[in-house]
Every structure is written in structure tokens, then in C-alpha cells.
Image (cartoon, rainbow, N blue to C red):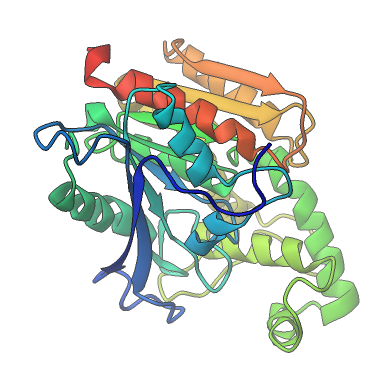
Amino acid sequence: MPLPWSTDLAGHIDELVIDSALLRANPLGDPSRRPLWVYTPPGYADEPDRRYPSVYVLQGYTGHLAMWHNRMPYRQPFPETADALFATGGAPPCIVVYVDAWTSYGGSQFVDSPGTGQYHSYLCDEVVPFVDARYRTLPVAAHRGVSGKSSGGFGAMITPMLRPDLFGGLASHAGDTLYELCYLNDVGHAARALRDQYQGSYAAFWSDFHSRPAMSRDTDGTLLGIYGCAAAFSAEPDGTVRLPFDVDTGQLIPEVWQRWLDWDPVRMVPRYAQALRGLRAIYLDAGNRDDWFLDLGATAFRAELAKIGVTDVQFELFDATHAGIDYRYPIGLRYLAERLSPAAG
């Protein structure tokens, strides 16, 4: 029975701070000094000549690093279940890196955008070299992976596409995909909320949001998520955030919506076929009752992979919604650890 309080790890987590040059001038004025956790597995200190694969963990929307301390009743947080995986010999040992990419809008989608900042470059060009310089990683793409859930799963899918020189594997748990299903329903709810509560104005929403306890209205999450995605996907070079829909009618604005679709992992597959063919590990899962239809998105992503000849994919749908699926994270981590291990060839 899991204890209701923290327990000692068999491995070790260093809670660090990275001072990012790339985030110093971010348009939201968010902190450029970011927490970074680096987990080393049991035995790391005892074998000073041994080097390890690494897996970078990305959080879902509104996630920040301190939330890994959160404990649900009768369940352990992922850093503890990941540690147990390695402590029991359930997977080859890895260095696990917990990355923070929070913004004032709730998240960055792990992309570079004039609306939020250079979070993709921060991950690839600052965090990865920072870790490789301080820990005994195997510093090549073949032994480096990335995982995440929801928006973090989206980040896990696109990052190896964009940077196959750095990442050789991915694990996506209900990652944002197939945007006509996962986002369009929220567009309708957002348009109604703006009309009925904020006179069609996001400025009025932000003023209200910051005047009261956050997330105290049932429309907060939808309005926050839609705006944050617009800031990531369809901001102008000067930082102006363009919504993909008319706030009065909810009607899509085709040229702006297309900018979102260009970031849909399902639609990205043909453009990044060569990078995807070179990956050593692809893990996809989702609950079969996912609230944003990300089970269908994962299925569509796998189908697109098959079209380019990538069929070595670990794929599973399981009985769940979008919530409470953290128990799946060690399964994806184990798959990456096995595929990225030097023993895998």
C-alpha cells in the first residue's frame, strides 16, 4: 500500500536551477531561471566509468516542476514509481531529466514562438547540453529519449521530428494530436464563454482571471488552453496572439487555423518522415475514453507512421479518460529505457 507521504529513493534526484539565456527576453516576462530535476539511478555513484541513456520528461498544460511532488490518495508520484522501476530491475538504468516549460499562459507547447518564448530551443540547446556536461550520459541521439503526457506528449512527438540529431526515441501518453477532434470542441466552448462572460474580449478574461482565485470558473481551463495554444501556434512576429476563430461566431479563420494544423503531429509525419524512420523507439498510448479524443489521435498518428514505413511502434489503448493516467508513465519509460540502452544495439 503506497504511503501517504514521500519515501526515500533508491536512486537520487538533484534539484537544480538552470539560468537560460534564451528565455531572458521572453515576451511574457516569465522567469528565465528554471528548476531542473535530474534523477540518477541506483548504482550511479558506484560505477564512475559507466554512462547511461537519458530520458527527458515533459509535463502537460499548466504543469510545472514542483507538481511532481503532488500526491494523490493511494498513489505515488511519477518520480517515485520511476525510481521503483529501476530499483527493482524492471528496466535498464537511465538518467531521467524533469523539464520545466511553464509560462504565464499555462504552458509553451515546447515550441519556439514570439508569443511565449524559445522553449523548444531552451530544451534542445540549453537543457540537453547542461545535463550532458554534468552527468555521465551517453550523449548521442541513439541513447536519448523524450516522454510526456497531453501537451507533454505533443512535445515528445514533435521534438524528435525537429531534432533527430538529439533524440532517438519518444513516448507519448495521450499527446495532443488530430486537431479537428482535440481542439475544435474547445473552440466552440471558448467562443460561448467569451460571448456570455467577457463581451467577446480576451483582455476582459485576463483581467477577471487575475482578479480572483485561478480556475474558480468552469470555463477558465478552456479559455486558458485555447489562448495558450494560440500563443504557441499562431502568434505574429511582434508577439500578437491571433485566435483561429471569430470570437463572435466561433467560425474558423482558415489561414490562422492552418497554422495550428501545421503543428498537428498527425499532419507533420509526411514532412518529417526521414527523422521518424531513424528513431529507435516510438511508444504511444491513450485512454479509450479520452475527453479530447486523443485515443483517436494516437491511432491516426500510428496510421500515418505506417504510411511512411514505420511499423515498429508500441501502441496501446486502455480503459480510461484523459485524467489519472500517471500510472502509465513508467510503462513508457521502461520501453524507452529498453530501446535506448546500449545493450539494445
